[in-house]
Amino acid sequence: MLEAREAALHARAAREATSAGRARPEPASPMRLAYQVDRDRVIHTRAFRRLKHKTQVFVAPDSDHVVTRMTHTIEVQQIARTIARALNLNEDLTEAIALAHDLGHTPFGHAGEERLAALLPDGFRHNEQSLRIVDLLERDGTGLNLTAETREGILKHSKVRDSVAAEAWGTASTLEGQIVKLADSIAYLNHDIQDAIRAGLITERELPSGARRTLGEDHSTRVDTLITDCVLRSRVTFADDDPRIALSESVLDATDELREFMFRRVYLHESTLRDALRGQAVVAFLFAHYETHPGEILGWSLPDDPPWRRAADYVSGMTDGFALRRAHDLGYSP
Image 1 (tube, rainbow, N blue to C red):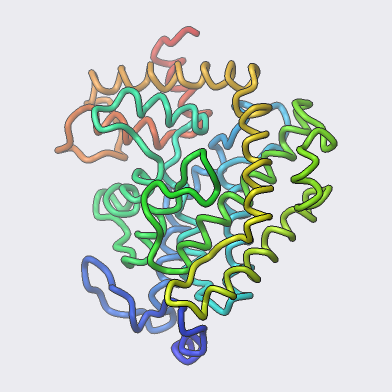
Image 2 (image 1 turned 60 degrees about the vertical axis):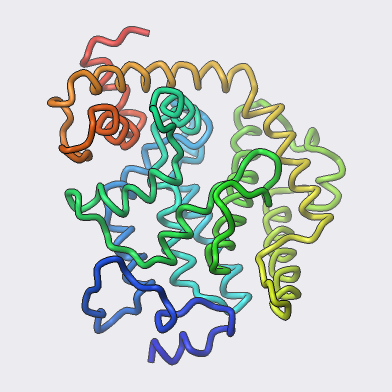
């Protein structure tokens, strides 16, 4: 029955029957198709559970309503599945990628990522760390053995500042992977606006007038506009030799204008940067300590890796609160 449902998806959809499979062959589940198995494995990881205590943008917020990595992930999942269902694509693969895409994020949001990137000889990127987690660190070093399509979607969900459509690690070969990349931008841009308004950094009326005219005057309208435009624009490309998940030019321009506004007014705001620097100092302190004391690392690293790699895995896996407690216990003083 499940195979018949998957066969009825759009011709461009990913399917278990055409999957590149897993690195280690394993018996098929009698109750679930391959991408369902991927999704369930991600949900049961330690890294997934820790997302609820990891910062999105605002470090150590006073409000209980500020977005965390967990609530962000749920919003990405919801938006991505809405798009996939409307386009008759594979919701299970879309959901698996969405749930796993941010597993590799450090404590203290992108600030922690930037600090680790400066400390490591090979740099640090959360999408690559997410893949490392599902491939190597979970299940005591054996990994989750996810399908190639889920793994590719995790790696290629990131983008650079230039545009929500910009490439950094290439384009996912599946439309489902492309959906998650765009859903990630739709989710974070809009919930960060809500958080910034609650924090008193901006008001709704201060958002760029052109973006408001194109996308809408409130949160739900903007999200609905972006999802609807994505579905309609993407569907047009499905008849081409190069189908893709995309926004129309006017909506993409408005989204990028809104994103640039958020960088200027929120992400690079003095208070945001001040909190970020405090988080970065904790990350640097912990990394230096565990790189020189790898014997104190309690799991979540591979014993044969060099000390810098073990320290990076351990520190990046910490929640904000755990990182602060460990730093305090080790004598850190801001």
